[in-house]
Image 1 (cartoon, rainbow, N blue to C red):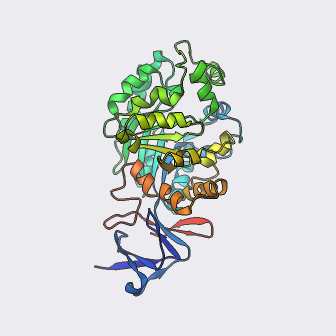
Image 2 (cartoon, rainbow, N blue to C red):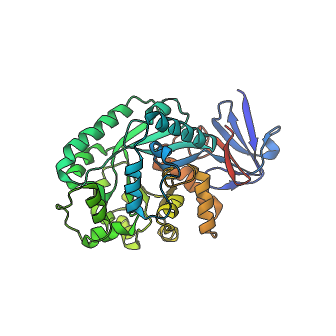
Length: 383
């Protein structure tokens, strides 16, 4: 068998750093071992850190044509309104932006993506992409009277994604404020053996709305002509109103969490150790700063020892779909965090969240995780 041997300034295996070691793979990149350099013989030498391929747990690839369209720091309500008004575009423009963004993610070393899909636009690119996608087919319908047609439309898109090989898919809720109880009832039976993603506590307006019915979501619904008469504020946080509905899923991906509280985290913990273990908190710090000018409460999440993963959100709220860019922004805003810890969120934790840890996320024997070089503040795929 032909082997390749890779040496970096340091090697990160998905869990920890190794100095003075070489990564041994077969010709296809399947991991054989990490061995001391003195046992390696001739090696391929790279400057910087070698790490397993990066995992982007939250992306909206289909919005890639909106780069630079929505102004920064508008707050979520106005951001959503502007995305809705701007997302319609010629199909050729949308498809070209999708292709470019997918290729750039691949070049930056991203090997897997949890991608939100409201349409089938991304299918063509995903058919030929080397990136492995978990396709989250998102349902949005706050008015109970539209639950059935919304669900049927969502299932049609879900069926379209069934044409893809080696890509996973699930019907998922968009957010607590955009899914009626009737729509929840139709979706929950589909969660078994699936990863389910939901936008969670991205704005203070969400907290106000669920606490007492106040805040900017009333303006959002009025502007969009959505009937809100059915809603009775539960007097608690949105997470506590919907979390139990997600429990039938294999894994739960809570995205953003910018305004999550310690009481919310304790609520999840008290629901059981198995539920906490399968719940992953996805940080999209560049998008949080872009939309709300707010950092996620990473210290709180770390203190409570929950599973943390990383995402980029969309080109409407970010300058690039670049997971190492998210790592850099986190370290800039939280300079005491060890690089080793943040890289684990970007590799093995992300692979576990998407149910892909059998092949991705770490340099463990038999895996085919890809190899990424981090050098001069950039990430680059080398295999």
